[in-house]
Amino acid sequence: MMRSYTAIATAMVCALASGCSDQSELAAAKKRIAQLEAELAAERAKPLAQATLPEPQKPAAPPQAAAPEPTPEPTGQQWSYEAREDKMTGGTTRHAYVLSTNTVNFDSPYSGAQRGRLVLRTDPKYGRDVIFSIERGQLLCRSYEDCDVLIRFDDGKPERFSAIGPEDNSSDTVFVRNYDRFTSKLSKAKIVRLSMNVYQEGAPVFEFDVSGFDAAKYAGKK
Image 1 (tube, one colour):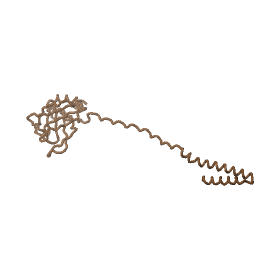
Image 2 (image 1 turned 90 degrees about the vertical axis):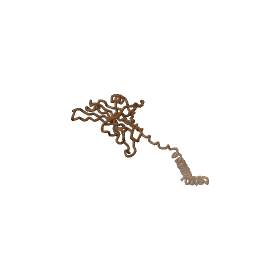
Image 3 (image 1 turned 90 degrees about the horizontal axis):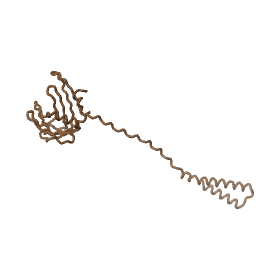
Image 4 (image 1 turned 135 degrees about the vertical axis):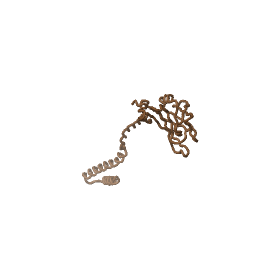
C-alpha cells in the first residue's frame, strides 16, 4: 500500500515539473498529493501505535483463605470403662483399661503383631487390682511366687513392682501389686512403660498412653 502511494505522488510531481496547462488541474493535483501524504503518514504510524500498546494486565488472584487448624482430639478417648453387676453379691465390678500404643511380634507359635493391655479393676469380691496381659505368649510369673515388673512413669526412673500370676496358671496375665502406689503415679502421668520377662522373648517394653484417665468415671460417679 505504501509503495502505491509513493508511485502516485512521484507521478504527480513529475507532471507538475513538466508543466500544467490548467490551474484547476494543478490545484487538484496538489490536493491529491496532500491526501496521499496524509494517508502515507497514517500508514506509517500504525505499527508504532500497535508496538506501544500496553499488554493487558492479568487479573490479580483472589487471596487464599487460611487452612483451618486441625481440632485436637479430646484426651482420654483411648480409655475404656466397663461396669458389671455381680449377681451373687449385688455389688458392681468396674474396669478401666487401655491398650499399648506399640505392638510386639513374638516367634512361633505366638507370632503376629499384638498389643499389651493395662487394666484397673475394682471388684466387690477380690478387691482392687492392676492387671497386665498380652494376647499370646508366656509371661514368666508364677501363681505361687512373685516376679518383678519394671514400670516407668513419663520420664521418671524405672520403678520395680512385684507381681504374681493368676491362680489358674494362665501365662498371659499378671497381677501387679501395690494398687495405691501405682494408681497414684498413673493419675499424674501421660505415658506408662511396662517391661517384664517373656519366655524366649527377653523383656519387651509396652508403652501405654494413660493421659486423661477419668477416676470419677472409673468409680461410677458420672
